[in-house]
Length: 319
Ligand SMILES: Nc1nc2c(c(=O)[nH]1)N[C@H]1C(S)=C(S)[C@@H](COP(=O)(O)O)O[C@H]1N2
Ligand SMILES: [Mo]
Image (cartoon, rainbow, N blue to C red; front, side, top):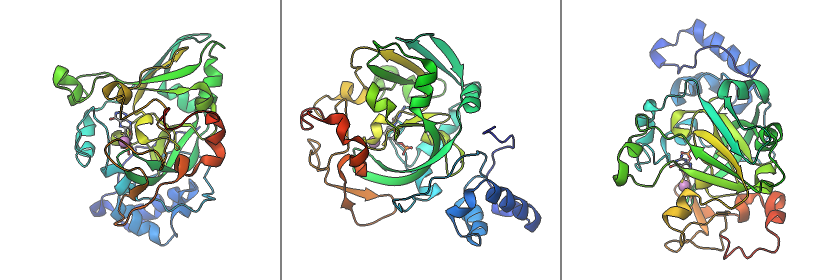
């Protein structure tokens, strides 16, 4: 069981009595979330940073690279989710229209058994683990997030694609009632549904996960509830949100941003400080909450794990 059947809620300072806080704190510690912060700081964090009560069970990431986590507040209040708005600070206030109840993912294409799999089934089948990853948007901002999820390879093995499948393609839900920018029709900022894809070996890499939460609790709507892709060595736009369809295909799909502007956005979108965006440098990044920029790392710091995937490719052309 990975899903604790308590209501997900945020502690409001006014509701915090010492008794309930004691119980919450105990639950929090039981779930392994406590080592995120020194135990004394939990009171403050729960009350002030408004981290929701941890409702997921997962194996903790040891954070061997000693990455400094961005706060829950930072991660959930600066978002790119064009289906709502291009205003990054407003997504969180609009995302309530996304209805994630009875969420399903349709699976089709070059696969043994096409099917519709519901989110509850996914939560029962795949044990969760925490992955503390750097995340780098193509626009030059970055953050470190404690995602909760499972390796995409596990779902792929379960779905059994045919050997002719060379790429895995993802689509975000299309629903004009939930996503205001989809309802704008030809005036939409980009064309929908949002599409992303990976080459099969990229999808099978152990760094690639499907995330269902962060900071120990279910994925906030603004971050792509209930389930999204995370590919930490690629620019953030590859990490498609609110996935409702997966297709196995033999031809390289046209992803949303390549479709919008193929001179600026490619299929691979590997983080690369040496290949600039036509309109700005990619050599540096600003971590959310920091004033000074820092150097961007090749493959976002995951070179050892992924560089071999791109041997023999010209990364200035296949960007
Ligand atoms: N469906 C969908 N997925 C999306 C986007 C989007 O607009 N729609 N934006 C992408 C971009 S550009 C980034 S940087 C990340 C942002 O994720 P975050 O809001 O959780 O930080 O989501 C990616 N996934
Ligand atoms: Mo992005």
